Image 1 (cartoon, helix red, strand yellow):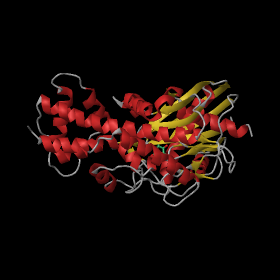
Image 2 (tube, protein in one colour; image 1 turned 120 degrees about the vertical axis):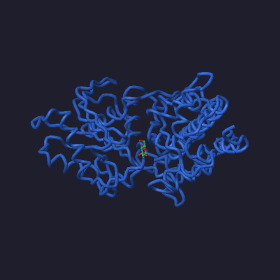
Image 3 (cartoon, protein in one colour; image 1 turned 180 degrees about the vertical axis):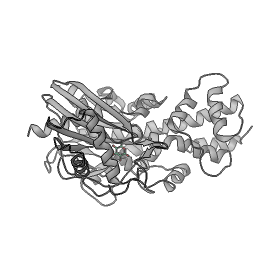
Image 4 (cartoon, protein in one colour; image 1 turned 30 degrees about the vertical axis):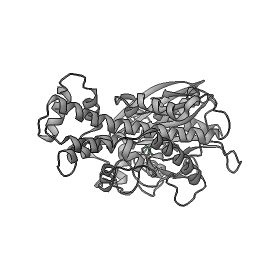
Length: 429
Ligand code: BGC
C-alpha cells in the first residue's frame, strides 16, 4: 500500500454527512434565512434584495445582455418575443484570463482595465454600431448591495477574484464610464442582477411556478421569490448569497482551504461545494493522506475525470493521480482514491440539496407544498458525475412525501436571457 488504510478511512470519513446532519443543515439554513431577512446580527446569509419581481412573460423587444461572473464574459443581443420565446441575435464570449496574455481578475488588474475589456466585448456584439439605442441588462455574479435595479455596488469579490478598485463601487457606473470612453453612448445599462436571479427570471419567463433560481458552478448560490407573508415589504427576488452560509460541520480540510483563500472566513458553504474549490479540497485531503504539506492542485474537471473512470484498473484516474503526486498506485489504491474523490463530490451535492429544502420549507411555512420548480444552472450540476443524482436523492430524503411536488429544471440560457428580461422589465414600469 502506498498509503495507510486507517489514515485513509479517517480522511474519507471527514467528508461523510449522514441524514441527521443533513436535516440539521436544512433547519439551520431556514433559521438563518429568517435572521438574515430581519437583518439580525449573527445571520450568515446576506439576503440581498434584487428589486426584481418575476417576469410577466409578455416581455418583448431587442436588448443587450452582459453576462459577467465566472471565467468567461459574454455579451449578447437578444430578441424577446414574449410567451417564453426569444432569439439570440449575436453573441461574443471571451475569457477574463488568458495565461501569458492578460489577466483581469488578479490583484494587478484595475477596475478600468476590467471594464474597458467588458465594453470591448459589448462593442463586438453590436458590431461597432453607434446609432441604434440599446438597453443593457447586466448579470453580475457577485454579492452586491442594491437600492434599485440599476444601483448595485459590489460588497466583496468572491471566487478568488481580486481586481482592484471595484469593491464598494456601483458596477454599472464603472461600465457606463467604460462605454463612454469607447464612445458607446447609445448603450445604456439599466439593470444589474445576480446570476441566480437571471436563472430564476429566465426560467419563470417560460415555466410558471418557478420560485427558486440557483447556480452550481465555479460559485454556488441561490435566490428565491420572497413574498413577505407579513406584508412588511414588497415581494421581490432575494439573492441569498447562500455560498456565505456558515453554520456547517467543517472538516479540517475545509478549514485549510478557507485559511489559504483570498477571503478567509467568508463563503464557507461555497468553499465546500463549488467548482472553484472541489478539486483543491480533494488535493488537500490527498496531501494529508500521503503525508505531504499543502494541496495537490486538482481542478474540478480533473476530479470529474477521476470519478468517471470505470475501467477495472482505473488507469485514467491513476494517470491523473500519478501525474500530480509523482507516486504510483495499484488498482485497489486507485479505486480507494476514486472513492475519496466521490465523497468530496457527494458531500457537496447533499449540502446544496439541504439549502433548497430550507428555502422550500421557508416559502411554504405551514401550508401544503404547491407543485413547483427549482431552476438550476452550472457546470458542476450539469457535468460533474454523481452531483445531479445525489442532489435529487438528498432532496427526496429531506422533503419526504412532499418531494414529488418539487422538480428541478436545468436552465442554461439563464444568465443572458435573465439579463435581457431584467432590462425589459425596467421598460414595463
Ligand atoms: C457569488 C454569487 C454568485 C455565485 C455563482 C458566488 O461566488 O458570491 O453572487 O451568484 O458565485 O456565480
